[in-house]
Length: 629
Image (cartoon, rainbow, N blue to C red):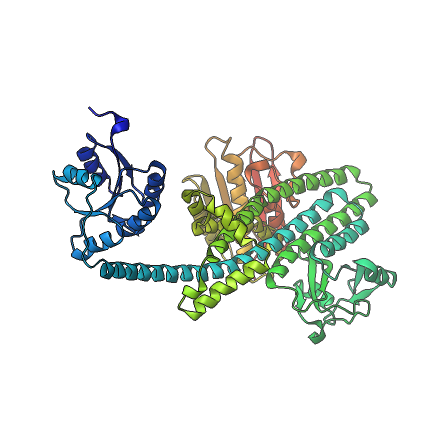
């Protein structure tokens, strides 16, 4: 028997497991058979092992046997290459020999296969008649394939250019949203550290202008008689001068501040010169865009926040939504600060301390929650930038002169120029890519990976912004109508997907409709039932929630009670559960906005909500809403 090191090495490149197994069985007794299922891996293995003979299956993925033979002929000019093919048309054999193969073996392989291999190892070379003709045909085929690849690459370049533009817009949006949320979190954090109302207002306008480079920001509070919006904090020198002048505006339609307070809606002017409703202010001559955001708590307008820019069209609808959420937090902070002052005046130190501790704890948890959800965004954006750099480097390799389409050629040139203008060293990136293994390089230029990172960043931002609904939902303009609470709550429970038998509902026959905003009131009962279920689901055996509706003894109201048999709510936190950001769920996902939102919505509708609970005996929430008139 021959020793292994004395046997010739035969490399067979084929993606078919059956074909490789057959060749291995026919040749392994006499030769060392090396195998590769992927043509790129096969080329690398050939270069590393320098085999005695290379067999190529003509039907390879992403590359033909003829193309692989041409590559191998250049890499290993002294190594014979033989193509094996099931396509027996004469042009296939001639193209294979023109590409550099020394032989062509048709399929199916028969028992004479081993002797054929021996002949090629001993120097057999098949003769090609009219080689120039067949070489020209082969080169034409390569040119057509290359042109198709260029067209495909050009299409990819266009698609990637569009994707790059969309990504840049998304990056800007995500960064702006991230800043808005970060600022909102800082405003919320102020509640835990600033008890003085004046300090709170001054710090708020300073942080808004410093974070967003706004020209000016100011906070107006409504006077005790309700006639004036009095400036209580203003940014920089202009703000200080207006404060010294005791600057104020009438609560009327003659100013954006007055209108936002009256209508409890945000007002925006993208070009203040064309806004008759804007009160001209000599202290702020460079203002070109302005927003006035109402500060509302439980349907009561405390005042308004003005944000001004020295640029035209400086604000978008998304800015209004996000900054209104921040304004709602400011309103809560102002309301809490005013309550603190009243409590101090009444010498109710214990109640003041408990309220402050609840706000501090809840706000800290909310800030931590926002931070956790925002954490994946910077990493995803960094990876997307890296992926785009590699894609731009590949685009830079396209030879514009080889592109037939003028538009495609111009697009490729534009991408190169913009990449160069952005300061990206494409040559350095290409050198780095050239040193990488093919598998690593393919992973880096994966569009699928790029889209996955964008999805991660987008999902994180969407999750963070979900807190907005809890903050601004109750402050929306109500659309009141006649509503059957029986039908609404029945549908709400059906959509919650709770286990069968958990909910028991009892309805009085004579229960009238209520006159409410259906969307907001549905949120009330969804939150109350959801909270009851979450309180019971871990520790309660045979959990039960009983919903009962009837007309109240006060005939102006409908009464709906929601009672559970859960662990109950301790007496010491029953006042705190209504405070924004207070939660007993810890890291379980609560934001502490549910019951705060419930209280605001019920109060805005002129109703009442009452809690009765003892530890170990469950909780009973009673909701009274006005009867339809």
